[in-house]
Image 1 (cartoon, rainbow, N blue to C red):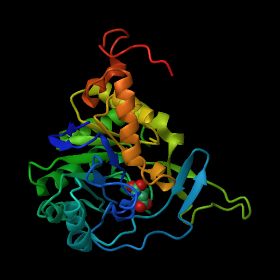
Image 2 (image 1 turned 180 degrees about the vertical axis):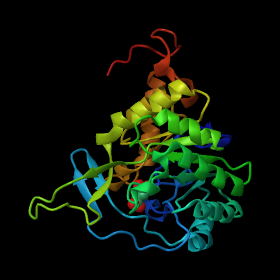
Image 3 (image 1 turned 90 degrees about the vertical axis):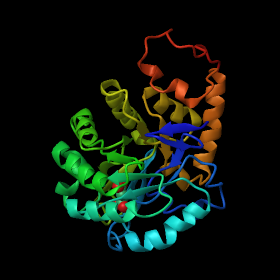
Image 4 (image 1 turned 135 degrees about the vertical axis):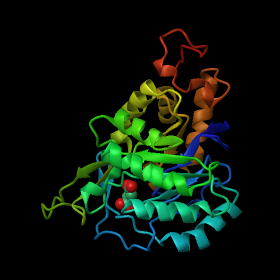
Length: 316
Ligand code: SIN
C-alpha cells in the first residue's frame, strides 16, 4: 500500500484531510497515526486566531458546512508543541499553512522550513471562510502562483510544496498550471465549495459566518471531476484527491481519475477511524481487481476500455 507523492513515501495512500483532526491528537484512541498515509494538520497561520462567530458547523444533505475561520494556535505554538508531538508518534506530518498576504506565506514557509520532521507542506490558498473573498488566492491563477513561489523559496528543496486548490473556479486546469509554474511539487484537490444553509426556526443563515465550506459525499462528484480534468491536462503532476471520501471504493474512484493519494476529512466526524478503515477497504478493492499496488490504478479511468491489465469484471 506504500505510495510516493512528489518524492515522499507514505505508508498508505490515505491521509487525513486538513482541518478535520487538528494535529492528530484526537484521533489517537481510534487509529495508529504512524500506520496511516499522513496527518495533514489544520491550516496554521502566523498568529493565534479564535476564528469566526458560532455556530460554525451545520449538517446538510450528504454533507457538512463549516465556517471555522482558521482558528488555531499560531505557527510558534504549532512548531513548539504539535509538530514535535506528531514526529514522536512516527506519523508523516504534512503541515498546512494559510496566510493573509504574500508576506505571511513567505514568513510561515521560512519558519516551517527550519522545523525538523516535516514530510511536506500543503499551502492552503483556497480557504472559503476568509472575510475578504479577494483573499481566496486559488480563485486567481496569477495570485495563486505568486503565493506558491513565495512559499517555495522558504522551504528546503527536498520538502514538497503542495498547492491546495478551490473547486470554486471556472477553469481549474488554468489554476493548476499556474501553481505548478510557480513552483508547486503537486496539488491537493479540492478544498470545500462555498455554500449556505438556512436555519428552519429563525429563517436566518444557519452559520454565524453566513456562508461556509461544503464538504462530505455531496461534493465527491465535483472533486472527482476536478481531479479528472487536471490529470487529463497534466498527467505527470502528483495529485492528492480530496472530497467526500468515505469508503475504499470512493478512494479507488479518485485514484482511477488520476490521484496518487487521497485525504479523508468529513467522514472522521462520525467515524474517527476512517483514514485507517478506508485504507483497509481500498486494499480489498485493489485485490478484487488483481492490482498489486495503488500505483497500478492511478489514472486508469482515462485509458480506453480493455487496455489495462486490471480484472475487468468485479461481481459486487
Ligand atoms: C476554516 O478554518 O475556516 C476552514 C479552512 C479551509 O476550509 O480551508
